[in-house]
Image (cartoon, rainbow, N blue to C red; front, side, top):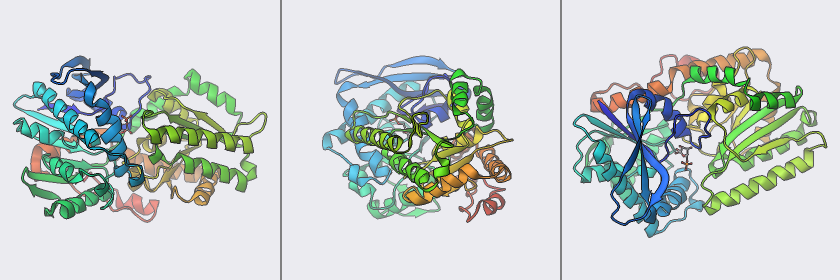
Length: 484
Ligand code: F6P
């Protein structure tokens, strides 16, 4: 098998380099070992309307990284425009933030067609193409248009929203039709698959039976593959990373005080404003936590050319400064707020130094920070994960303390509870969570998707268990779980 993986953002293979995306960091270790060619954007653009795609090739583990300069005339319309000002807000159920124009949509389609032309160079008789994420919804259809007959897989890292929301994107019918050129479409959760199925039925009037849609393109299988991490590798990285100077300086600065940590791209889907309001509320409701528990919030700047992101950056900075002004002391800062990215090895050490991990997005496809926080904990004295029930990760990680990120008082109470949780309960929750992370690893995710793509509809994939009412019930229910 000759595998070609495609994503907009790629990772360059260095653990110390800051990485902006869950997707790129998650794929790196598995793609490196698989011998695949990983094709993505070089981050540069080039002029020339008829520009022929040329990739710069680097070695990546046992395979190669192929970096494409994208067409200058269409890049902004594709990335800042249609992908991140129309699709991203729609996929995260923020129709109010959708900004769309026909030019942006045309640019999106042009860039998809351009990348499809670039991929022809990597095609061999036994090639499988595996396309990642919302940047490339129509890439499969472009490949078919160019005569490509190879199996085409697609995985959506974001949520697919409830029916009606995607309708706010003017070209959604075109796009969903184009998506059916893929042979296999993978989702993070059963909800995402159901929402997509409802959209195919209602908007295209097509039938979906046993997860199979028949369209003009042929058969497309819809399935669920929740993405995971390499938990043991991350745990080893975290144990080593506590000796890193950045991590040991942080630990020394705490003087026995407890720490909660949040690590997010600065994005409105991450629920940063609600989270900071919850900490504000917690210090007001529990004054004993003043000076004894603080928050380290790392918020990596993202998509800064887009207005909604600039506004969020100002709003969060103002809020942090208000809360620090209100609760701080000359020798104590409640929220340490950092606008930069860290490499994975330092992050692992920072997670291990925090007694509470707060991952409270309003909507999230999976959220791998939640998984990494758990994997980074010391098994003898683990921290507690406070997790939004609207992150895809909540389906598996139900031994975390699940919160509703819209309920500020509820979050404040839960964070205080997490800070005070006794050791035996922390250990019990940690063990349940780690067992799930090990079972649903990134290696398993990669293998399951490719097996399903190769096998077509003959692949036997069992469903994930339905989310359970409580974490102990979850432990029993998931003992035989595999991906679906
Ligand atoms: O699925 C979401 C994603 O593609 C992830 O890789 C990451 O969380 C984010 O979007 C990266 O966004 P960008 O490449 O725009 O920084």
